Image (tube, rainbow, N blue to C red):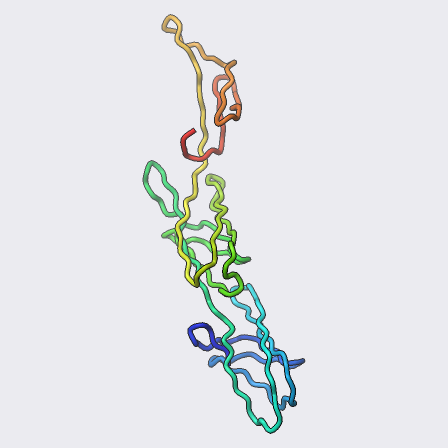
Length: 209
């Protein structure tokens, strides 16, 4: 019988014993018949959320043992939930339909900006896991990291809109506006591009410069 960390039966796990295989039923049970005496490695193949993983255990079959029933605690589910939002004119706005890429899986945020993943906790416990948030070309992608310490993790993630900066530099002489198009303008050390009358830079984040 296969149980998760909450002692709940786990179904549809493929179990290998030598060249034979079986699946657990709705009660987490699997059966192999006519197994000779000896010590065997039994292998469990989980295939949750298109992210398979394997657990191995050792089992001993001894003489005069007609039936052998054991419980295997091999799967511990963890949940990663979050929310994606932005701010425009000091108003917080939840982002719907942002794509989240985590541990080889993909989901999208709902109307409230929320998302959720289930995964096998012990595979990643103690590790820093990077994941990505992608919305559209008008926002910077979110490249984030979480530390897997508990079976439940929740956080909220801000996506910065891309904005364009345009500057016009001029002087006033005798009430006449004179555009200065030969100046060198820098933003955080980077020289801004220039057209006929403006200095500009596209795709920058909100902030102080």
